[in-house]
Image 1: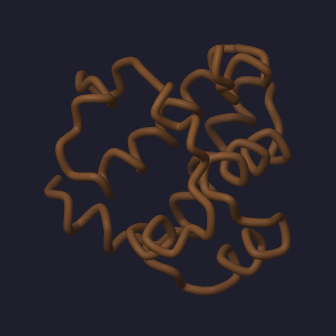
Image 2: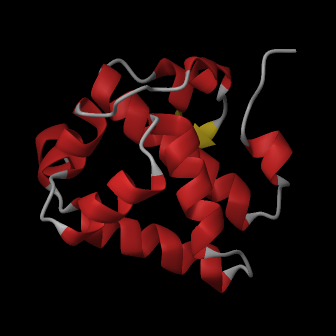
Length: 118
């Protein structure tokens, strides 16, 4: 799938897929929300509003109010690609979220998922 198709996907639909993945692994919607708010700087109220509207996935990240400066500490592989090596900055933001949700689904604790400078 090319980047533009990903950027045009519906954020509410992708969000529900992320929540479903977390819940299948015994985690919660609240865990997913905490990760998204940490990564993007959205408040819980604004995140809820984005889920009610038909926001494009790319626009959700383009309009993020305060991307967390520690997101560059996110390392690892998602779909066979190292997230830190993704060239397109917008796609890298999307892959950061994918990686964090993967870690959540694998049972990592929130304090390890939400990176802090050492």
